[in-house]
Amino acid sequence: MPHPNYAIDEMISAKSIAARIEELAREIRTEFADTDKLVVVGLLRGSFVFIADLVRELDLAVEVDFLEASSYGDGMESTREVRILKDLRGQIEGRDVLIVEDIVDTGHTLAHVTKFLGSRKPARMKTIALLDKPARREVDFKASYIGFEIPDEFVVGYGIDFAQRNRNLPFIGKVRFIDES
Ligand code: PRP
Image (cartoon, rainbow, N blue to C red; front, top):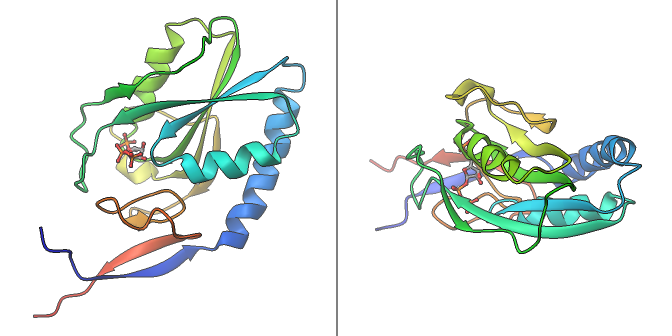
């Protein structure tokens, strides 16, 4: 597939992301202050940057685990079918769990993952998403913590890809397609 011609305009700066993560970490620290060891679950692959920054701001005992769920493949549109590609390594029964996601779009991924992990009877399970695009929602889902609510734009960076590119941008950018005709 030829690579489409597009430019990326900054939407949320690295500095704004860092400041918001500090605020979110304070709220999470308060909520889980009495937790012995919080299991922080990153959803691969998009959350890898966010979870790395978030856990370093959490002054709590944490265990980090990963789950891989995929619904998009390499395309832009959700197939609405969520598949678990990689399960957790650790046990979560009776534990406090925080699921970390980069973006909630249609809501299918987190709705499915919370049901999947909820069946293992964690003591408490909360979700955090850096970005929320409520205009795209197809299932009723709201993350416990949200970094930024954004309009229905195609975004990349800070872990989020476009056909497996641009995950390594330090900011959230908006994709602008360039029509050369
Ligand atoms: C993307 C994104 C979220 C999910 C959100 O993941 O990282 O996990 O889609 O969409 P939804 O709310 O419509 O379900 P993707 O399946 O592209 O995998 P990736 O994290 O590996 O990029």
